[in-house]
Image (cartoon, rainbow, N blue to C red; front, side):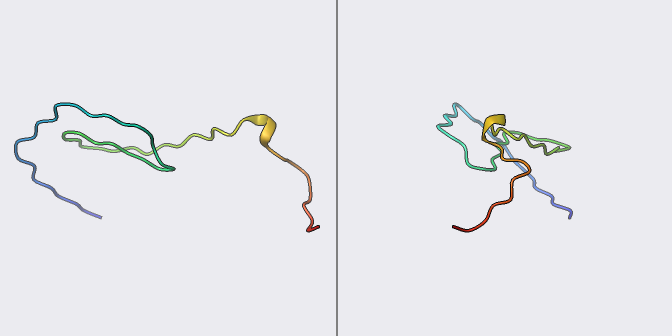
Length: 56
Protein backbone atom coordinates (compact mmCIF):
# COMPACT_ATOMS: atom_id res chain seq x y z
CA UNK A 1 0.00 0.00 0.00
CA UNK A 2 1.32 3.42 -0.91
CA UNK A 3 -0.15 6.37 0.98
CA UNK A 4 0.91 9.95 0.34
CA UNK A 5 -0.24 12.93 2.39
CA UNK A 6 0.85 16.53 1.94
CA UNK A 7 0.58 18.39 5.23
CA UNK A 8 0.79 22.11 5.35
CA UNK A 9 1.38 24.17 8.46
CA UNK A 10 0.60 22.29 11.68
CA UNK A 11 0.51 23.61 15.23
CA UNK A 12 -0.33 21.47 18.26
CA UNK A 13 -0.60 23.40 21.47
CA UNK A 14 -1.53 20.68 23.94
CA UNK A 15 -2.80 17.10 24.00
CA UNK A 16 -4.68 15.40 26.84
CA UNK A 17 -5.02 11.61 26.63
CA UNK A 18 -7.44 10.25 29.21
CA UNK A 19 -7.27 6.60 28.20
CA UNK A 20 -6.50 4.26 25.34
CA UNK A 21 -8.40 1.48 23.60
CA UNK A 22 -7.23 -1.99 22.72
CA UNK A 23 -5.14 -0.68 19.86
CA UNK A 24 -4.08 2.96 19.76
CA UNK A 25 -1.60 5.17 18.01
CA UNK A 26 -1.08 8.95 18.27
CA UNK A 27 0.94 10.61 15.54
CA UNK A 28 1.92 14.27 15.49
CA UNK A 29 4.13 15.59 12.73
CA UNK A 30 5.93 13.80 9.93
CA UNK A 31 7.43 10.34 9.89
CA UNK A 32 9.27 8.22 7.34
CA UNK A 33 8.73 4.83 8.95
CA UNK A 34 6.20 3.47 11.44
CA UNK A 35 7.05 0.24 13.28
CA UNK A 36 4.32 -1.64 15.08
CA UNK A 37 4.82 -3.53 18.33
CA UNK A 38 2.75 -5.27 20.90
CA UNK A 39 2.89 -6.19 24.56
CA UNK A 40 1.07 -8.91 26.46
CA UNK A 41 0.17 -7.41 29.83
CA UNK A 42 -1.88 -10.20 31.40
CA UNK A 43 -0.47 -11.06 34.84
CA UNK A 44 1.04 -14.57 35.04
CA UNK A 45 -1.38 -15.67 37.79
CA UNK A 46 -4.38 -15.17 35.48
CA UNK A 47 -3.13 -17.55 32.77
CA UNK A 48 -4.58 -21.05 32.62
CA UNK A 49 -2.25 -23.51 30.92
CA UNK A 50 -2.73 -27.20 30.24
CA UNK A 51 -6.33 -27.38 31.49
CA UNK A 52 -9.13 -28.70 29.32
CA UNK A 53 -12.27 -26.66 29.76
CA UNK A 54 -15.56 -28.53 29.50
CA UNK A 55 -19.11 -27.12 29.57
CA UNK A 56 -21.00 -27.45 32.85
